[in-house]
Amino acid sequence: MKIVFLTPTSDLRRLWLYRLGGRFYGHPNAITGPLILGGILKNAGHEVEVYEELYAKVNYKKLMRDTDVFCIYTMTSTAKRAYELADEIHAKTDARVLIGGIHASALPKEALMHADQVITGEGENVILDVVEGRITKKIVAGIPSSNLDSLPLPDYSILKTPCDCANVMTTRGCTHCCTFCTTSRMFEPYRQRSVDSVIDEIRRYKEMGFRYMNFEDDNFTADKERAKEICRRMIAENLIFKETFFFGRTDMAEDEELLDLLSKAHLNRVLIGIESLNQDALDEIHKGQRPADIKKAAQRCRQYKIRLIASLVLGIDSDTREDIRKAVEFVKEMDAYQLQPAILTPYPGTPVYRKMMEEERMVTGDWSQFDMMNVTFRPVHMTPWELQEEFYHAVRSFYNFKSAFRIGKIFGWGYCVRRLGLWFFSQAGSRGAEFAAKHVPATPYYKLRSLDREFLRQEGDDTVIHEELLSEENARLVPVKVKAENGFKQWKKH
Ligand code: B12
Ligand code: SF4
Image 1 (cartoon, protein in one colour):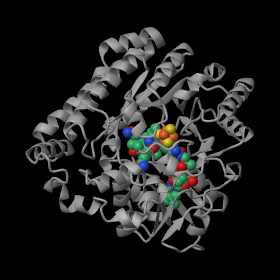
Image 2: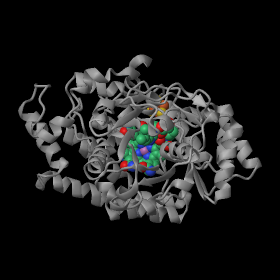
Image 3: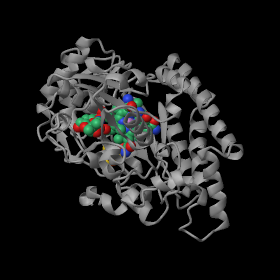
Image 4: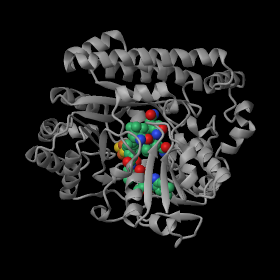
C-alpha cells in the first residue's frame, strides 16, 4: 500500500513569505510522530512518504492519484486545515483517511466527522493493525508503550519536505501538570528512555550529517542526573552540534554542575516557561515556581552562556495588564536572548479549557486561532482586544533597535542582525493586525475588536458571545457539544 503522512499548517503559515522567514530564523524540524509511525509501516513493507506543509508546498494532485491511505496529524491550530484536506481527499479519491495527533486525541468525535478512523494518544502499538484493516473500530485508543527503548526511532528517509535539524525525544510526558498544558496530558505517564538508546540516536544523526539537533522533551532537565549523563556521553564521544535547543524549567539553575555540562555539550539555547512574575498567577496555573527561582535561572543562564528564550503566558486570570508589562520589562532587563509571549490558549483536554467552557468565556471556535498568538477567550482583568494589544506591546517593546545592539554585544553581531529582522517583522506584523482590527471586517482581529465593544456595551453580562461569532461556520466549531462527550478523561490527575 502507499501511505502518506501529512502534517498540515494554517493558512498564514503556508504563505511563501512566512516559509521564507521560517527558513531564515529557524531550522526546519519535523514532528516526530509521523516519522516513527511511518517507519513502522515502511518496515512492514509499505511505501511511505511524510510531508510537512510548514516547510514546502505539497503537490496534492499528484499524491491523490496513487495513495491508498492518508494519515493526518493534528494540533489544535492545524485541525481546521487537517479537516479541509481530509474532506478534499474523500471528495476526490477512494483513499482512506486516518486522523491522529494531539487535537484529535482530545476531540476524537469531532475528528471522526472528517476521517474513516481516528487514533487517540500514542499510535505506535496500533497503527499497523489499523492500516492493514485488523482493527476496524472508528475511534481507536492508542496504547502508550511502557518501554520507550522498544519503539523504533524516527525514520528521516521517508520525509519529503526540508529538514535541517533532528528532533530527539528522550522522554514522554512531564512530571508537572500546569493547568494550560496539553502534552503532559497527552503523553501519560511520564517515561524515560535509557541513556544508551538516546546516545545511539544522537550518533545516528551525527553520521547523517545533521548540523543542528533539538531535545524536544517537555522538560529535558526533569531528571538532572540523567541529563548530566547524556551531556557527559555527548562530550566524551564528540556528539556535539552547532546548536542544540532544549526545554527546561527554572529548577535547572539550582545545579551548577548541570549548567556547566549543558554548556559544554553545546545545549546552548533553552526555552524556560517563566509565565508570570505574579505568585498568584503562578499558583493559579500550578506552575510550582517562585519569582525568585525565575531570577536565579535567568542570571545563571547568562553566567553559563546558555541563551534563554523566556516564555510568558499572557492573560492568566490573576494577571492584570500591569503584571504582564512588569514581566516583559523583567525579561528585557535580564538580557534574555528571545521573548516568547504566548497568549493563554484553552486547548481541548486541559483544565483551562474546561474552566472557560463552564464559565462560557470562549469567544471563538475557529481552531486556526488557537496558536497562542491570538486571543480566544474572555480574560478577567481586560477585554479580549486589550489582551491582544498586550501581545503586540510585548513583542514591540522587546524586539527593538536598542535590544538588538545589546544582544549583539553579548552574543555576537550575527545575532544582532537576526534581531533587527525580528524587530522589522514584529513591527510590521503587529501594526498590520492593528490596522486590520480597525479597517478590515473580514479578519479575526476586527471581530475581536468588535467583540470588545460588544462586551463594553453589555458590561456586567458575563455570558455574552458576540452574534457574529456564532455564524454557521463558527457555531459548528464552538465545542459546546463535545463538552460532555469528551469526558475530559485527562482530568484524573487533578
Ligand atoms: C517539534 C514541535 C514543533 C516544531 C515542528 C513543527 C512542525 N514541523 O510542524 C515547531 C517548532 C516548528 C513547532 C511549531 C508549532 N507548534 Co509545536 N511542537 C513540537 C513538539 C515540541 C514536539 C512534537 C513531537 O515530535 N512530539 C513527540 C511525538 C512522539 O509525538 P507526536 O508527534 O504527537 O506523535 C504521536 C501521536 O500524536 C500519534 N500521531 C502523530 N501523528 C499521527 C498521525 C496519525 C494519522 C495517527 C493515527 C497518529 C498520529 O502517534 C505518535 C507517536 O506516539 C510538540 C510537543 C510534544 N511533546 O509533542 C509541540 C506542539 C505540538 N506544538 C504546539 C504548538 C502550539 C505549535 C505552534 C502553533 C506554536 C506557534 N505559536 O508557532 C506551531 C505550529 C506549527 C504548525 N505546523 O503549524 C503545541 C500544540 C498544542 C495543541 N494542543 O494544539 C505542542 C503540543 C506544544 C505545546 N505548547 O503544548 N512545533
Ligand atoms: S512544566 Fe511545561 S511541559 Fe510540564 S506541565 Fe508545565 S507547561 Fe507542561
